[in-house]
Amino acid sequence: MNRPPNAQLTHFGFFCQNLDQMVEFYTKTFGLVLTDRGDYYLGGEIAFLSRSPEEHHQIVLASGRPNELNFNPINQISFRVDNLAALKTYHENLLRDNVPLQRTITHGNAWSIYLFDPEGNRIELYTPSPWYIEQPFGVPIDLSQSQSDILSQTEQLIRDDPTRVSIQEWAQGLKSKIFN
Image (cartoon, rainbow, N blue to C red; front, side, top):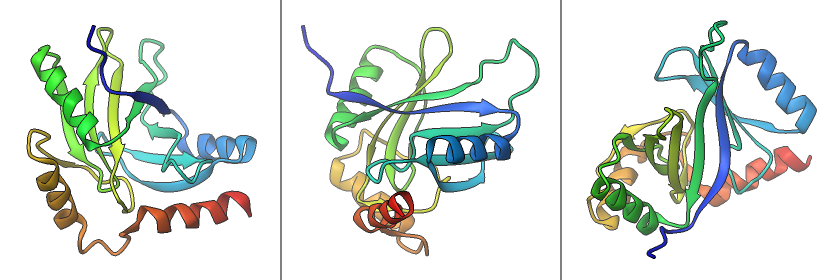
């Protein structure tokens, strides 16, 4: 049996009714740090929280959860893969198996494939890039390109972003927020 490349569960995203209250709860109760917050492409706002300098976010909170009980509060379940080559392998396998993809994008700080499981839960497969830029950021990218083309295209997209730093610089700054 051919096993797929390694994918580790790294963060969980869900919709909430009161974003400020949820951010306060997770930062106060669990010591998570707000790493970024901004407009969400589906409307409302999105907040990213982490307690690990190796992960930009471990929890994603998105506003917009209605009061109805029939709404699925899960925003996404995310798996980190080892590198861009592994992500490209997943992309090829998903296309080969006719799994519908929602989108493939660069976040500037990562490359992602979004898809849905059979019951409609959104799944993200991603791998980090060498950079950090303020989130949210998402631009479609073609994962069938070569790794060097994907890297080059992403670098061009974020080259002039004033928040751009190396992932190591960003992790060091987050470390000081978490451990001080």
